[in-house]
Amino acid sequence: MAELICNTSVIQSLHQLGLLHLLPVLASPVCVPAAVEAELAAGRASGADVPEPAAFAWARKRTAESTPSLPREHALGAGERAVLWLAMESATGIAVLDDRDARRVARRLGIPLTGTLGLLVDAKQRGLIPAVAPLLNELGRRGFHMSGRIREAVLKRAGEE
Image (cartoon, rainbow, N blue to C red; front, side, top):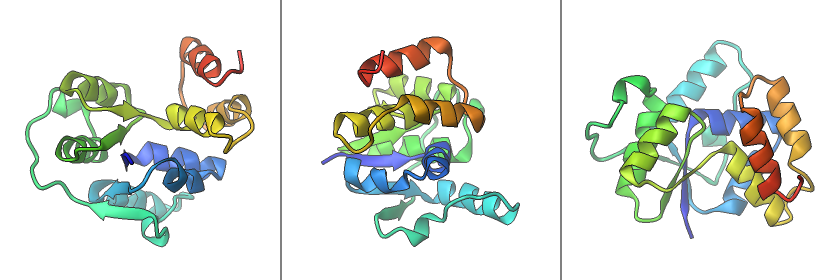
């Protein structure tokens, strides 16, 4: 089975939707890079409602063994770089990223990827959630940015045109 290597935004978005429990159902193991854990801890320290991955038995904390230069590295956050490095080291790793620059780098490097929206479509296709559209609406209310074109494509993949 594939290994999901999750970035901060994905964990936070699923947490906001009350759907973090989907991660270990969709893939195993689920990796949370140490840099992502640190970003989440910083959010909790500032008073944000942010999950603590260590509280989840399914979350495996990892640090990359090597940290090679990445294209457009200056445009990436610490969590995004850590996700990409770990995905490069993993034979079955899927980078789970929402940031446009990070996704472009993953594609350029040939790293398999998905994001919050892809995970929601997968969950719908497996019968784990009844619909994607209300979740997209909730994400939008919470500040998740997606173009109308992306929204339409996601709904089409989810069979909710």
